[in-house]
Image 1 (tube, rainbow, N blue to C red):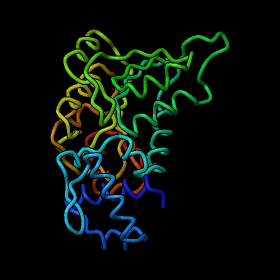
Image 2 (image 1 turned 45 degrees about the vertical axis):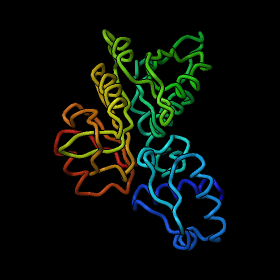
Image 3 (image 1 turned 90 degrees about the horizontal axis):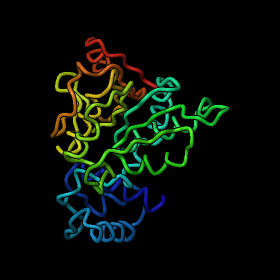
Length: 261
């Protein structure tokens, strides 16, 4: 197993359990205790955990992992979700996209799908985003018009947040907004761990005629600190086939189209 994959799994263990034991982690990941010790030392050097005798415990940032460590989580499911969400967006649309791994995959799918571009080389899609990684990737696509909000960049998610986001979005009208979130609860709505991200994402949702949530099944039924939007504002939820049937049915009963891909 590659080091990056081990680091991701170790951080997931910490996020879920609050601590990691070296011997237990070595058995679960199929590697030596010495390898796990080196991995934990490296993650501690990056301030992503706190080393203890025989293992590690959660640090203050472990609940909200940097984007680079989230990429490997449910990668296949996220790619299927992204393809299905991109297929919902007609050519010529104006689309808001926030940050995060799944939303970033949607942006990539929109940029490379078969109907991208036209014979005249004109714009076929307008993307409004507060994610600087998405803007960076799509800026080289001549058929995509990129509008980037202002704001202060969060290093964990590459998202711009703060009042400048709202000042740019004020007065804009979007056909769709694609939202990646940390939690989707049938009654409590879509939420994220950071209140500043939630505010920026809420502003993107408020501009749109239709809101499309993209979230893998591990995020369904969960709660997170800051509300992004009520479920009543959501038109479509795109998730994977492992989504619990009872949650899918409860969300569908609220008039939301649920695609399990």
